[in-house]
Amino acid sequence: ARDTRDSETLRRRYYLNQIRQETNTWITAAEWEAAKRNEPVPEGTVITLGFDGARTEDCTVLVATVVSTGYQWVVAFWARPETATEWEIPEAEVSLAVAAAFERYQVWRLYADPYWWEETIARWQGTYGEEHVHRFPTNRWILRMTTTLQAYETAVRTGELGHEDSVAFAEHIANAVKREVNI
Image 1 (cartoon, rainbow, N blue to C red):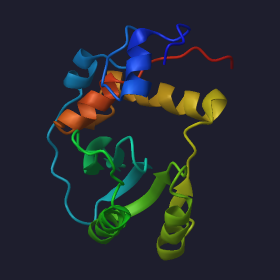
Image 2 (image 1 turned 60 degrees about the vertical axis):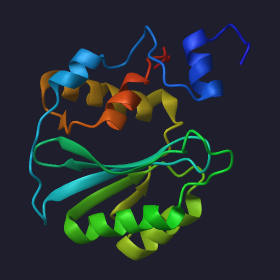
Image 3 (image 1 turned 30 degrees about the vertical axis):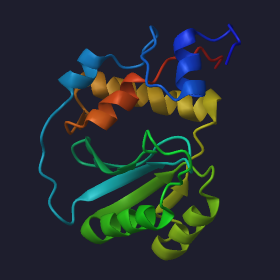
Image 4 (image 1 turned 90 degrees about the vertical axis):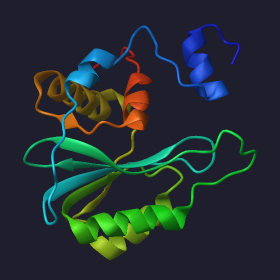
């Protein structure tokens, strides 16, 4: 936390669990605000799901995207209560949210960051099929994550991707920063 190679903002984010916006913001608040829209999503719509989970200290989220329009919304979100000293993401609730999404929509793919959730994701693969549930490690910085994030950023800026009005979603996008990589 005292290592000055990282900015104070970044150290506060990672070591004090404080939401902070870096000067090298990935998507600005204005760009995110401009992509906000309200789009009804009927049952049976073809969607993808994105899952990023922690177990105790950070947040866990399940986000849906309509394949045909690029509209995104937060399906479910879990965060450690500020007053909690010991807390764990309720795994059963997460699996119920995934099940509800598979029941309500036509889920083409669920991309899930596997760290801390390997067994749960394996169960989802067994239930919904490996053709629908894919492990997507977010620590693969060099090529896969870089190209994915570049495409996401472009889609936000061009209007191909829009999202619901969600405070939690906006805070987490604002907390994302750019890092230089060599590809």
